[in-house]
Length: 338
Length: 212
Image 1 (cartoon, each protein chain N blue to C red):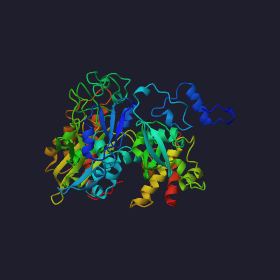
Image 2 (cartoon, chains in turn red, yellow):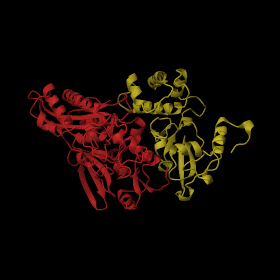
Image 3 (cartoon, each protein chain N blue to C red):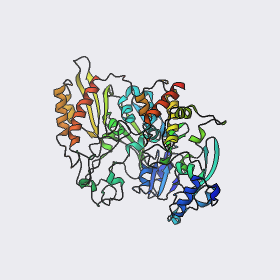
Image 4 (cartoon, each protein chain N blue to C red):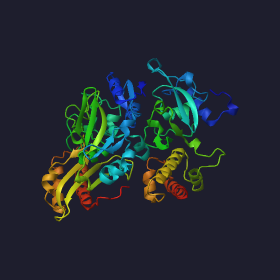
């Protein structure tokens, strides 16, 4: 690992001051950053350890009646929190579908939002071409083995996918990222926090230099009652998704279970959690049945552009959408999370 | 370096051989701070740019240790190379195999993916700390022995620490000690066994869980 200096500030303000130095990076759980540093992909000259800033690990009620998850809350604590399990089981399901117990004990909510792609051509510095690692150098994945790359929203410059499970569920729950900097505070919806690669794939998110994620807010909503997170992967656990689906439905229980509102977000198919906006127009006012679900799946895949090795993901995604929405519709509000 | 071949341990021999082959490049090791068991002089091309070493206290298996460490030293390398606690194993060194699993403040973590400097004053428990002071084995260790829950043994320290933590997690949850074999497999999925001793590992964990 490259050499770097280290500081452990006591609070957010002090951390933000230290972040002004060039080459400085925040470290919390470190599960992704240290991995990337060992591989020479990331080479910060200074690490600012924010892991002991206690206020940021808190999970509690927010002013709007929802739940606020501190940026340093571990994935394990978030998934185990009674309020998360009762009111946002989709989030607990998604977190528990990712990584291992050891990693979930270390990984933080803020760090998970900033998790970088697992594209092997990004990870392996033996490949000189990677626009995300070295802007302007090209994309080795386009001509390489790209079985688990994007089928939606990719660009000439980058076909990598965002690997997070948590972010997919957060996007479906209309979660908001709370951000601080020396200039002040701002709030960004999770669905707008990650970005498509375009010509600047080096930027995964809209977070600017010197900004810090301090919390994620889950608003109160009826979408969490009927929800399901479906993750499809090469082995039963401890693997990144080939395709994942976060489905959340607000159903009119009195009116033959017609759909009042829906969120449908797909993971591991694009550079960001991919929101299927058409789902609302196609499902609201209708019942969840084979016909309506087929229309949603077709709409989600209508713009898909697979590459050499990943055409299978288009059909996999369509089937996963049908299954996840079916499960969500059948899901009782208090379904136990594993 | 140990040159007394009569008393040369397997580990000492391997270290000597590695040093002779010029392979003893250990990021983060500082000659002045290295314990006698460290693998020879720390030879590093990046010495000129190394960040200043920092003094920390690591509390490992209830014993405090003063260490002078470079910031980039991982907790895993601090345990193995500075404190000679080589029970904790380096498998992939990238958080994928679980061989380096230890407990920090009672929670299992991958020691390869965290920095020693981040754990000053934390309570760290390694496989060396599982058995009682009188040498009697931890129930999880005894169950692994009874059910032959290993083959080569390299992943075993990580499996043991992970299983001990699993049982404690389960004890604290509302679900009690009831876990299906599938649930045990899921909760142990962060520990890979290259020999494929999984059936016996699950049996051992199930028995230890029921006895907990």
